Image (cartoon, rainbow, N blue to C red; front, top):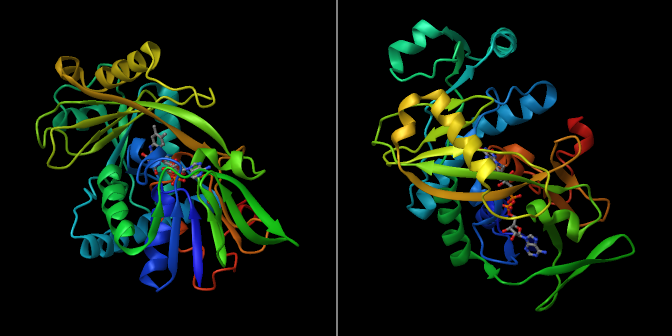
Length: 352
Ligand SMILES: Cc1cc2nc3c(=O)[nH]c(=O)nc-3n(C[C@H](O)[C@H](O)[C@H](O)COP(=O)(O)OP(=O)(O)OC[C@H]3O[C@@H](n4cnc5c(N)ncnc54)[C@H](O)[C@@H]3O)c2cc1C
């Protein structure tokens, strides 16, 4: 069995990892470098509760969060690389009465589902955070929400895949060719490629390759210099999210969300918004140095649900459209094309 994967972001790399482990021959075709794309730009939060998800999609995301520990263990063992996976918990802060009411409702809903969730009022938060912004009313502690250093994870997987699969970088897929409703070959700017099965995991660009409703949703990010161990949890709110990296002088601050196509760059407005959001959360962040600015494109869909499984073309599997949760959903997505590679395990329809 030979599988060709379009796109070497975290989704393509995770699928490659799982299939290589099962003895499948893999080729990854990537228009730039593998291990980059949105997967490199992301915050790395594993946050189904903080994101306020519900219904069947919540269950799907919780299942992936539960898979993370084992997924990381296997990757770290195989690659001998550390990925910054950290069950640090996420504190979701409220900046208004309306936000507090909504978060308290979520806390009750999660408790009914048996998930750990705890509302903390401002007084309780002040005990832990001396520099809490004046407008913070309180927040919910979701201790099972966590984070991974997505860049380290991508690097680990990219190294592994380069050693165990054929990787064609700087090779752009122009067209997927099918014959009688069955995957036939890929046409790229460097020639044509055949395989038994093809996985489309080209992130925000997937809609350029196949007629599927995937589009880019730009997100700007920045990082601040902090003391090692200065902040011990992710602080998430409608204004920004602050992600301290473990054992690292780095606070990742995200993210804007704009539907501006593939327009690049960090804007004054986006940077201002992120800085204001972080200072309104913790006042002392005003005096931290800016370490880095960057941006990326979430692969979004109209209903914000991923497209996983059957493409309508036999032997062409979709693994795209992960919107805001592709880092979280990597382990469960990587299970999609196996054990029976053509079976649909999850499709957009089963998720609706
Ligand atoms: C600012 C930001 C913050 C985010 N924060 C989080 C978070 O905290 N938690 C979370 O779970 N998710 C987060 N996300 C979402 C997450 O990053 C994405 O859902 C996930 O990375 C998608 O992975 P992917 O592999 O599908 O896409 P990508 O990582 O974008 O990879 C797609 C790859 O396909 C390649 N490609 C595209 N077209 C072609 C072609 N024609 N031929 C060959 N190769 C091609 C691209 O070059 C790219 O390398 C965030 C996203 C952004 C932008």
